[in-house]
Length: 256
Image (cartoon, rainbow, N blue to C red; front, side, top):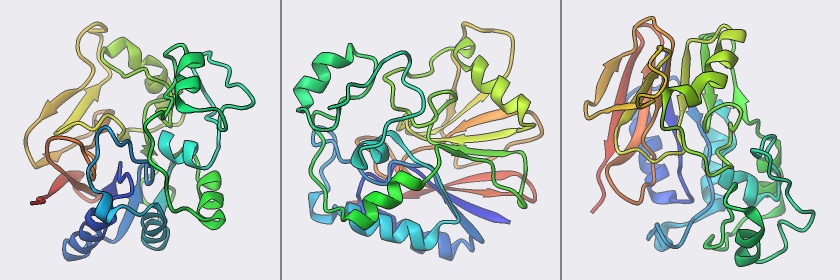
């Protein structure tokens, strides 16, 4: 089976339509979305002409078999993450201003102080409240894990980015306890695919990025960091994993 994987759309409807067209051309059997369907930080993105949270959710709902939530999806639907690195969200978190959120957050969680308004209706917001923080797809490859980021911060709602091997210990423990081998994530907006392996050199860099467009994942447990569909810099696109030979292909989308 060929599974197309898209992540970090950030309301870019034009890029999403192109990704879905290319996924069809590449004969993907199913599609997965790793979150951040919505959410547009005005400091980083300049696609206002094609920006529609409503359209992106409609396209993802009608096209993807597996969908997980990212931190921006949670914020857009006034939903708190299951883990917050010790930060206790105040009851009025979603109604206070961005600068106020930044002041009380102590730098532990994202504050969305530059988040653009969106065109979501109650229907789309309700959908975002229901999608899970992670998925282990059954019936296809029971060793896959789909999430926006790393356990326990599956949604990427904290400001902690994984940089060293030892920071992945809880994620490896989660994978081992569920007999998982291949973990697919987004969130970090890497220009290239990144790979992390469960090895003993705890203070070395966690993810090693490679500029290639295709990789064979082999049989060793691995966390695969995928490039975003909508990035503020570098190349963008989506990915395809072939479950027969475990070949990962990156499909770039070039924009003018």
